[in-house]
Length: 283
Image (cartoon, rainbow, N blue to C red):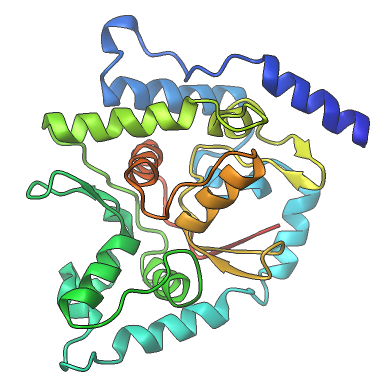
């Protein structure tokens, strides 16, 4: 096993880190990137049904999928959904609720996040929107990585299950810059191991690092937030990004840093047309 792990590390270090190629004249064209990205995964993993990519490593490994199906009879994230539902309905001290901050009272809207905000010129994730809602109503913000935030986003994701991601990139130079920054971050190597996000999730989906089966980048955001066995609890997209940086021995950014929000924007755009599957469980 140690030898196989060493071989895989060597493969990652030697493999190119560029994204799936769009035509040269479409290099700054999100739609062309989307087609190249989708084509790469559907052709490389031709036996995986498109919608199944949202199940991460369970779409790549038959034995792991059997384990997941058994575990999912009693989902380990149920406690977070129930807690989040109660929290979502509980009024703030001023009498308002989370529903007052969101379209459709916050129900069934996960598939529209993150989005580009015309007024501020920044990417707004669901986590950021929830804390801004709290602050606007005189409440202290929550940690972005787990606990209350993971429960709230678990409930909101649950109300959107099966809805298709529909992320827009408007023809605004600020939105295009955020998208390009997210793409750059995803494919840039960093840390002592000199890994990019793509080293694992584009070049090596389905392969093992130690006991972990690497998930494909296509649909990787769909199951967020997730219950992970290694955490023994729930974690948000922010927690996953911080953890990934730590695992590659890079310095993690502050949760909800602009780079983290931009890479989430990029990856969620690449998931357009796939169903929300969160909350989910992962090894």
